[in-house]
Length: 243
Image (cartoon, rainbow, N blue to C red; front, side, top):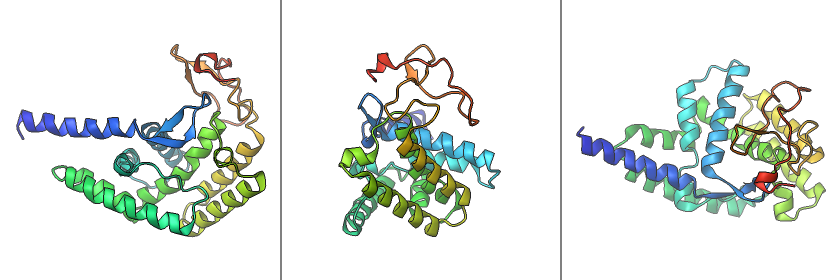
């Protein structure tokens, strides 16, 4: 491959990366700004990798990270359509849009066999890495809510009872479709419980008292890996406009 060809390939990947950063999701940061697909994909990659290590899963770590990074690539073309509380008709329409976008992406990146294969593998949900990611993909919005984002129930104006029923149906459907990951289903149930009642260490769903670390106003709950450990350098997120 010539230098020009290699640079053009890098440019195409840059287009995809920047595109992911411009796709807004239903989930938000605590200041009301929407989470982007780029942020969601990074969260998914990190959480999926860590959980695979913690649970000693026999998963290919390199493949896990690759599939996580491209799992929502189709949405650069068709946008993010939240599946929370979606009807069967809406799910069918979403699947059709994403299949069409997948074909377009695979054509656009046909000179990158690894990309074509990865895009297809996640959609096919046949390999264990893709299946692992699909379940954790549903955990990530719950984590965003725990970190101060606006829960889906508030965005849609659902009552607490309606939201609990939707969450329970989603967990039940995932448990049937992905029975090989009982530990992940337990995590989903616990995340729903904490989203509803407020995380005991994170100061509730409004995102107050999260730590500010790194000197750039980044708000992350470092030091929460073990239950009961206090957050690092707790401080209100005034620089993010959070309450």
